[in-house]
Length: 304
Image (cartoon, rainbow, N blue to C red; front, side):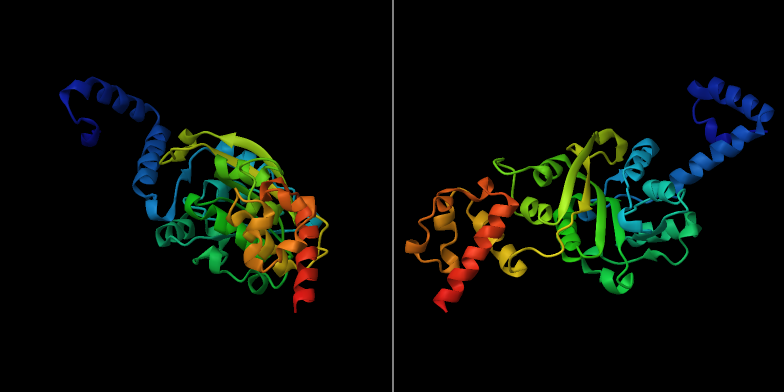
């Protein structure tokens, strides 16, 4: 019994012969060795243009899944960007979840279909940013989870916002700096548009930091896991479209006071005498922005 592939040089011949002897005594080792090399060959290469950094630590995967709370009797769980399925495998160990995955990378889709037959027809080969969740899940509430592609993490959260009546919870692993920004409150320099918009409808919790070495390839930055849980606000006490517009306009020129930042909305200078207009956008809470939107709405009615 010989293993030519192991006898690559005379330098390692002794080790190879020792391994050969071990394999003769323990056939199971050969099976494990073959499985290891099979998986190495049958793998998916991370694609830089898709922002892929595959998670390869099952302990981190377990911690992420354990962060799920599934509020309001939610059973549908949608994983974004499963890659090679390390997180998927952990999710499938929970029969109480009805797990689906969405993956834009065709190589990953093929890999998942081959290695995770339990997913059956719940592998969606498409772009999450273009998914109609209401149609796909027939309006049923759902939880979103995933190791989100770094280059579209903010866009993913805007998509969550667009489906906020349906997405009751979202547990995502993203760049640490983005996680910090989303979880920050008023007064922080990293507090921004997405912070306000998400916090208007979700409670945001920073759960834990994840080091680069648990990914393949390892990213150049640290990652973090955050959890969004839908709050009780079904409808803001103002025009929601205008609220989004006011928040975005206020942060468009962060260094300017609200008095100057809101000029493009057509607010007359004589109407902006309240002390709040001496503040900058980063100093306002969600409630402040709701009140500001109400004021803008009233001014627009007067103007028209």
